[in-house]
Image (cartoon, rainbow, N blue to C red; front, side, top):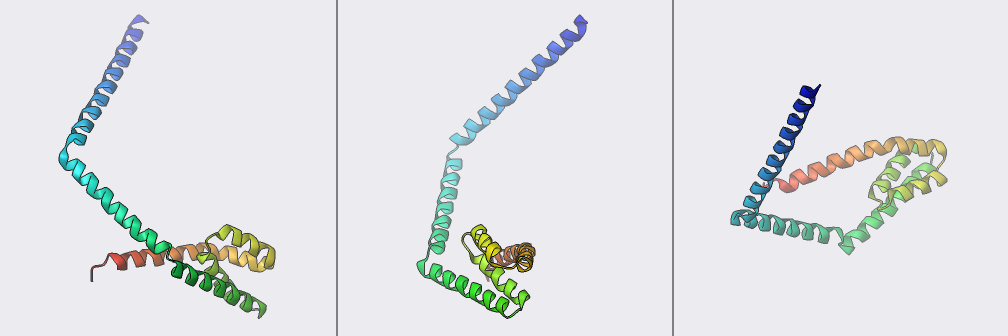
Length: 152
């Protein structure tokens, strides 16, 4: 039994020494990396590029004219959806309501409104349409990013 305890103690000591050596290695190279002037320059350049990108996106997102257009388009989609539903064309109505849901700033709240105002069958159809809308939106966004990155 004493031999097993000694062996376990030795293994524990080796594991502790290994952990301390690894941490020392990490600290040493981290200090070396942080002290490198080229690293600091690259880090500064990267942060500036991110700030410029964020400023450009922020200005694009909060453009009042764009928000007005989005609101108008949102209301138009809701009205078209209501019109199609009143005519009995559930598929076309759901298509327009799902577009409105996609443009809405608070889709959960809009879904609550739809739940109380739409017939249960139509609301179920809308719920089944949501994953398809999300996939289509992601595909459109990926295509838009690809076109923006393309130099041609």
